[in-house]
Figure 1 (cartoon, helix red, strand yellow):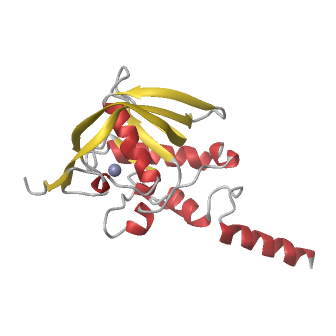
Figure 2 (cartoon, protein in one colour):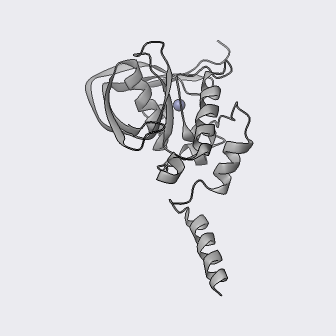
Figure 3 (cartoon, helix red, strand yellow):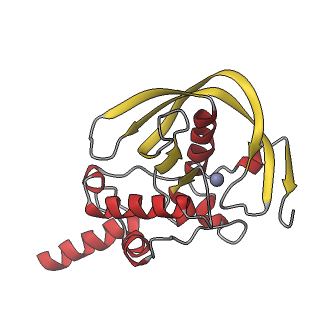
Length: 200
Ligand SMILES: [Zn+2]
């Protein structure tokens, strides 16, 4: 009887997507079975995942070796010549989780850095309009209004305390683009204009 109750509870936890469970079976499959070059989801085919809101990693997940594998594979994917992006977000590789990688053009060596459970707390500065593309919307670019400064908070890999940071310029734009992905938003939702680049 007790066994049955325990089993029922664990099934319920999986069904409800209990936040204490370290990754769902589907997430584990994506992380472990994918090649280093992960499959990048694209619109409109994968709109169910790309339009969904992402959730935080639990404490258990933040210290899981699976998360390290995911970060490594996302880095490999965004820097691969076939993608050549400046940022990537969890939903783009099939995971509705608050993880983004951003190329920090404002830092020496312009490294890609990973941000977990990341949020934009506020935006400030002037409105700037610049061209944007997205790995999940191939063959298109758009002119998108953004704010020049983003005040972000996040968990840095290997740490448990949240950090806060002010980011300016192009990296601030990338943070806005990537965190939008975590809310199910795409740049095409707010672009002044979107144009086709495929074949040009
Ligand atoms: Zn994008």
